[in-house]
Image (cartoon, rainbow, N blue to C red; front, side, top):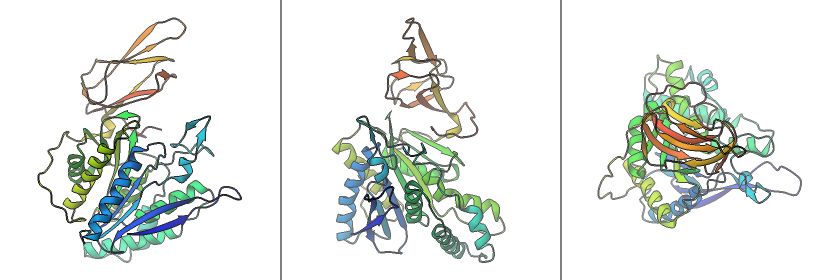
Length: 371
């Protein structure tokens, strides 16, 4: 294992921040795997899992069982880790400007198209190499004028030419679930089975360019932009939601790390004996069919249903109790599906997302992710 420290742009005189990158296997070898944890810095179960992965990958490397290259960033957001306001950790949004740490990554497809158009030919493998080189060149040309933008650019530069990109997060109160591109459903199902995911949410574009899609969508877009050339979807990426914020168990972290290793072994990144294949626990559903349950007015939230429960259209999900009158408003779902996440706070402002249901009957458009 080689540990690399990458310094970030300083936010003020006398301060320094950096990201620590753990490198395993042979640099430049394939497949290249990139894994990062806690980009939303308050989603700390991911850090427990990445620390387990450090141990797992170190042992596998010592035994010569890493086939390609693995890049692991145990905590991807030192800026967010340091944001505490009135005793409360705030790791999802940049306190400088309110920006989401997992939105607004560089969209490189158009730049790469212009670069590679004259480099592509009849060989899909050679086209993959040319596109990866162009992606690296496009990243090298980016500049940043804030520490957060510098962080985003440097993380993306580490992952942009990878075969597999796994971005480890968690929700507030949730079951294991993940997000991936619709055309990569088969790989998403493999990952979901290895982790025991209860929901797999697929989209061709979820909106606002989150980290995983900044790595995967350029390949899909280039297929559409340059249909005359054979272009592979050469990067599989997923956002993995490791249950809820309170799920900081050593046993769960080890279980999840082993699940990730099983998936990587199936993708020929690790040499690992897999005794039995884990059966999938869900069928993927469209992210556009995910139903956000919102509070109709301010009040105290009383849930009727918990994460992991199946619901039917019309079921009561929560009550919102008016603090002035005591009036109870029951919020019901519109679709059948699995309640896969709910909020942690029991006080709701009007419009607050209370829960999310993975269903198939809705067809939302626009930005599909939570703010």
